[in-house]
Image (cartoon, rainbow, N blue to C red):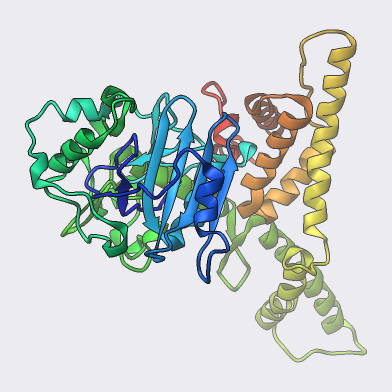
Length: 461
């Protein structure tokens, strides 16, 4: 999800960002990405440039602006949708490069991270899908693309606007109040062979972005089912909040679907641990259910041993039974933690995870091979009972890591065997219901939280 905030539009951009001034970009060789890179690369201390080809036939290019090195130019060339020319803070160059190259979240960003891929608008990327090593793309309902031609049907006064020179530019703290006049000046300065104005994307409109429907901090808390005091602080923890669609003097406002996506990811992050939590004997602290079980078992073993010693005529211990229970629980705590916690745990938990993944994939490989030999459609058999038992053991001790475990199984099944995430998710759900020691309600809740979005299906129960 792009959190980069550009500070100006290049005058020769095809897709202006609303509210931002236009900068004279005539010094940029926009048809030569290598030359754009050379503008800044190795031209002096603190200057940099880069260019890369895109898989769709386009390219991206970046360069620090030598005349004003606090800023950098970013150019995105799409073979079908023209070019985007932005000025941004130099420190943001690498972040936007990553988004454009690897983010799988389009190339135009508006309204706090809503993105356009040339075909459709999507909400800011927030819900992780480990099966695809990225985010789940959430289309915007009833989205309307707003073009420059749409906006320029209104009267404007281009003589009230001006194009800024880069050497003297300083980023504005507020958006231009008469940006419509600046847009008209931009349109008037475009060469005749430029992209038609009805193909120059400026913004989007959608019912969910109606200002009357946006929610404030209290509304966000309500959607997430938490107290407003439990939300990250808006000044110090802004990156832990969803990207705001607009800023007001009273604080940020969000669209309800963006708030719901954020709440969903929050549940996916914290939900498995809360679902599989238990309380330890005597200490009354919440811990993963498996750790509690290990602690209880070791407590009993140690208590029985101490009880035997106390009853042994050759050796008498001088404490009563309640003290015996607490002593046993205390002595059992660190061994139970040492079993699975930390990089030097007694049981190599990362190796168990790898073995689990390979065990499940081994069963899938067998099913796929058999289907191919018989030239039939692949039918996935149940995961073996011993493997399910080990899955049970793992997820009850590592609930936080369960989403990544399931995600990697789905990812590898897709890459190795061309199985859909939904097929694998259904198999995991069915197999756990058959052989897990967890109850059905807990299994369903856990898989709703832990399976990647692409592995969920509406008929799973």
